[in-house]
Length: 172
Image (cartoon, rainbow, N blue to C red; front, side, top):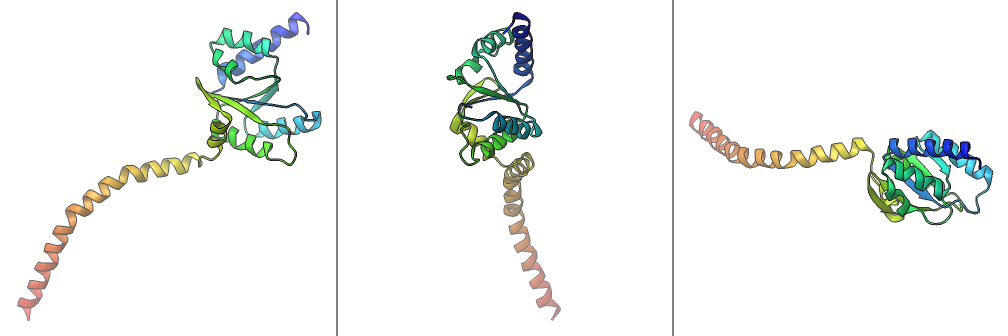
């Protein structure tokens, strides 16, 4: 690879490293060019840029952007996926790796500055959508207030029922 091409690749990697919140490392050995192209297209529709990268060029780009921890998820020849939405990327990658006889396997990930194992990346794929998580959080926050309301209103409701019964008995 010529020096100009290497500089161009390093600049593209620096841009991807700087803009991506989630980086996932996968194997690609044994995959055909056609299957990798199909996988790139599918991942791109989910907002994931998927590239086979040279380790030395990635190391240079990582050092220049301060994302050296990305080197911890590399192991042998790897392809990297760069994404802003970690959950959506993990879900799409899991679907791609479950395709029959797929040689692509997830090796690890980098979420912010935290290194993830392959199992943790797959656990991200099991998370419910953001709207569901927000609704669950709202329900968890509302539950203590709701219980307090019921606890305070039940004695008043009982007192009201006793008074209502007394009024009806006096009216007869």
